[in-house]
Length: 441
Ligand code: PMP
Image (cartoon, rainbow, N blue to C red; front, side, top):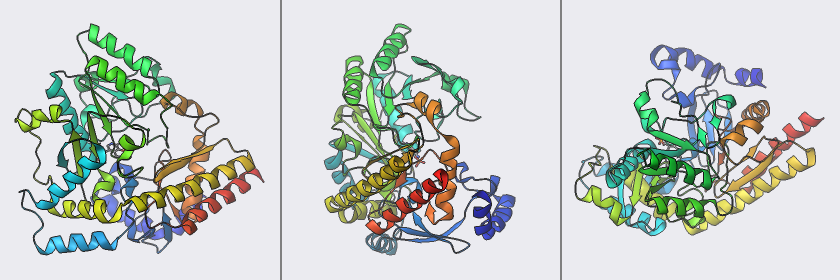
């Protein structure tokens, strides 16, 4: 399958040879890497993308889950073009920023908002706000979770199984070079789906005079496929953090606007102190947002924290966000996404059962995946112990060779768009069934 993909993409190979001379490793972001070369895309329309070799693919990657609106959506195109005619950037507030804030406050039940240009900036600023509000430095996160590329959260993301450490004290490890050890020491990981372990760790840290400022987490882990919270877990986390006076930041960069109108906050009925958004918010334009309670956001209001950025609330991004929220991601769209996801999850699970594959299908809102694991994944430990890396790799190649465009990381989920139809999700299931029968023949 690997040789076949390389045969299908000679122009990407040529492009890579050229790119390699001017871009470090030939790409704009290390997440775009693939051996021996990445697939270079030329255009997209609705649920489809085309690579530079002219291969047409159904897009289930969707810009790492940013394009729930689908590619080149006319409503967003109109909003961005109209905005461009009247000026692109002032670094002064515009009406769209107010409208977007009003809609986010309504959807997420948090009154005060600020904007950023990416998810990383959103989590960076949210953590700074939580630190200023509590007067503490330590940050608690979930082992294996990704929250962006700033130093504080580039800790304990992906490691080999034997380096995880013991369950209550997972290893604090920098994710790549260039991250100061002093910063790593201030980020304490705990495992997902275990609120008692979180509680014990906070008590321990408190005894050492290192109580965390915040817990930053996703309500469903979205970078090990999809790992759903077990019943009662999120409620217990809310209880633990409240009891200890620790700010609960729910990172909705992937879940917000993609799994429900009001993200995981709505879907699971959580009461976060803060949420962070990005990706789908801007429908392909750089954007991010932080929402918080009036009490916490006071530190921004009164000038204790400088939450700043030349491009924050950029008019083009805000115009795209306004059109996304008001015209594209409507209640009807979320119903459509749920219907598609039920179909694809049901179809894939049927294939798994029929062929007795060591796998299971899972979905939520616009997102889902087939996880190749012999046992259900509930956290990073069980992911590492059970994931079938070879099968995951093969599924990716199999998809790419049959016109199903997926994220280069084998640990990511699919993202559906409002422009996908039953025909497209059925094609996904068909390709999966083909792989399953080839494997078990
Ligand atoms: N938080 C989560 C949960 C994410 O999945 C990501 C990106 N995959 C980020 C933050 C960072 O967002 P960005 O890449 O826009 O900086």
